[in-house]
Image (cartoon, rainbow, N blue to C red; front, side, top):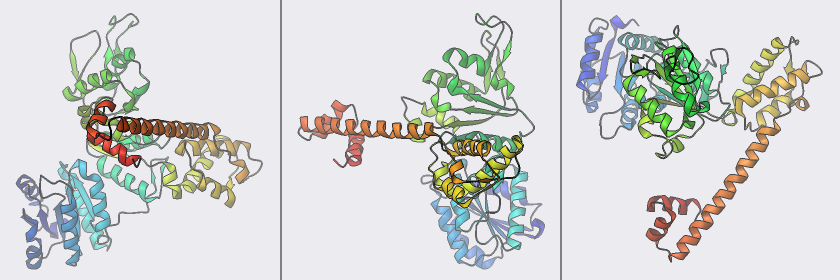
Length: 453
């Protein structure tokens, strides 16, 4: 169905949103009805025939859970509505929006949106609905590749692929979380390649490796003579990425002092080179990544919360390989073909036992470890059929995991014994015990629950 023949219902408690959509679709659609109160959905659908419904995720600003949108989405589907339902969501509700797709939504749009992209989203939703694919809410599960190396058919990776497609065209700042070796840099590149800045620079900086003395010079640049070794003017990474995307890797490892300097630049959207007082405006799309958990990052003594809010408009968590085992054969095949070409080997295959061994391994080094395992096996293999004996996993990764587990168990035991001793000292008085331990009462209660004390 063409949009010009479509009847559209828009439900949102924000009058400005309703006005904006009505004006945008006035010359595009056959008719547009707007409604602030979702309680009126049933009567509107009874008295009118709609082809597409735009439904807000939240109808109470004091709640903002997205559950309201899911509730009304279910009601719409219970009424046997066979048209397209597009959810309207804010950046922070992306995960909820993906849930809505599983509950029967056709698509979702993120506000604020580009008008052309909203119109295209409605057109695409109408096509899906006409083709019979708009009623089950399942996004296309056939896509298993983004770029040349970001692969996966698991549900976890499908969700990430879908987020990339929806978020990339916006200018939202993105924080990518995940263990080492999960492919966070590939996610960052995929976002850039699908953004409106795709033909502009993509600049990566491992900020966690920058010393205090190099941090400002590397990111913001310097003028000749700014310090002893500054023999010529240098452009910083922010300026190099101007109009494009800046990827700050391992941002969870920078010091509080470095965080303060970075926050100032992000707030003012301008950089000042060392050795000058003249600020220069910057226009970048910021993508950050870290292997530090969000819980650790939110520790004010380690990471500034105001900086977290700046870099974390949208969050993407990359799962470890052990949680998406169904992707392992596809990844293994990819790496095998890649290294066969590199080392001029004939076409090779895996035996069934080799595949079983790959699938059942726990991969402390994640995709990176799988890649190096396949490369090593292919180099050393005697024939074109890789056997399970050819697959040797890294002893370094295993030793690291065992060492970390021992350290964690030891620390937990020390903490538990310390808490028991202090509580016993104060005859069970939680207030006095928490004060001596330097914890709040709430934090102490959490630890008591954790250790079953």
